[in-house]
Image (cartoon, rainbow, N blue to C red; front, side, top):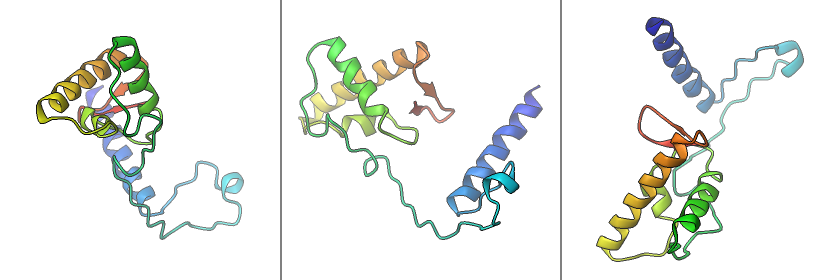
Length: 130
């Protein structure tokens, strides 16, 4: 049912916001959190660029399609949150504006292809996550 799915998505967003604030809802508190301690004050700031340190960081963009697909998959595996083609493009050496735009478009196509193969999931926002 669409209604059920919409409610689940809303609940998921609510829980994610709670967890970001340090509030954890345990499924089995007597086992997972026997002392009843609530974690707060995580002060975790995550941005798409800051959280990914990759092998390809400041590397050249591979010339062949197979190399491009491999490096995109390797980079996305290092992110803990959804990313865009722009996020991945920033992991490579600076290029001219036209070259960078072309590379970003190639990365976008690769992300779509990898997602179609079921190796990534595309979010409602058009981002990709492992």
